[in-house]
Amino acid sequence: MADIDFSASHNLDIEAARKRLQDVGEDLDRKYGIRSTWEGDTCHLSGTGIKSGTLRLSNSSVSIQITLAFLAKPLRSKIQNEINDRFGEFFS
Image (cartoon, rainbow, N blue to C red; front, side, top):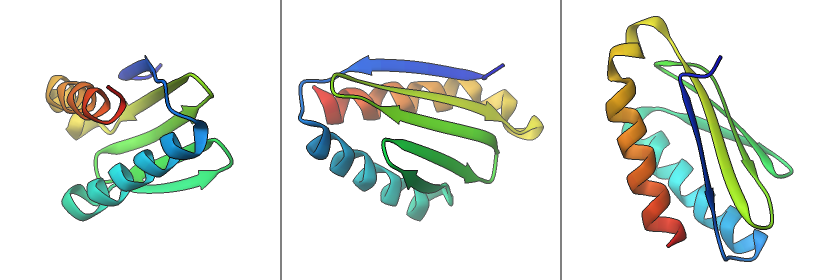
């Protein structure tokens, strides 16, 4: 079961949404070492603190599920808040 399960709707065309998410991914890689690998409209997340992570993009929504590594579990609330802030910023 995912420690973080988040979804949000968006009004962007899918290419613009993917570009914004790729920009966020590059920022997360620079700041936190979280790598993102895209396969179509699905992005796989990996890195320190992440056991597994998947982001799915559709024409009208984006969803993210992350299972945290054991040592990162105490940071769950902080990570969830960061995701909420970033998604609100990029899809409002």
